[in-house]
Length: 115
Length: 108
Image (cartoon, rainbow over the protein chains, first blue to last red):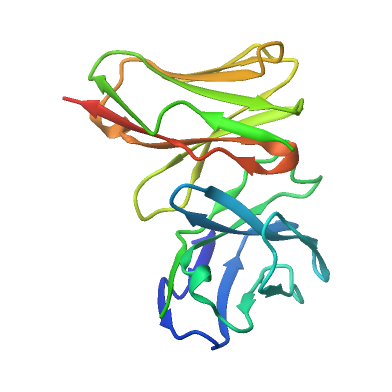
């Protein structure tokens, strides 16, 4: 079925480790987004991408790296994980013509715990 | 900086009544505003989009209003059902700023 999938659903790692969260969408949407969701903060944008090889920072980009070599994939990497990055991470996509006026389609999230 | 606030963290409504959720924003004039529903352990799901030149938008039992003078959007669920229990998020679309959400509980 078409959709947006995130993997893994759950991940436990240690501080200082590198961890990559995967996101794959089958709609060929131009735009993709990464958010983190924490109690008391709601959804906060980390990075987004308007197309392959085009990425830009969101509200909370520090400590994260993204890439977009293919339209359908948008991995998020924590190069040296810290406990403050424990969170639920959501990936989303939307159609072209810009993210304005287009609904976002979300994956079901990755729950990341950093010990 | 732009700020978005949603009313109360939790709202309890009796089944069959109308639930009204509020989204207020400051320091910005969005061209669009969207509402999403989020269930526990799931990602948000898009419900409705309303543009600044639209006063009201409807979809089945859902209604959204957008008052650019008050800088406020209201989200209504009529004839509410226990299945409507979820967290509802509003977002200033141009800036991709999400509110923290309102948890809605429909009591049978």
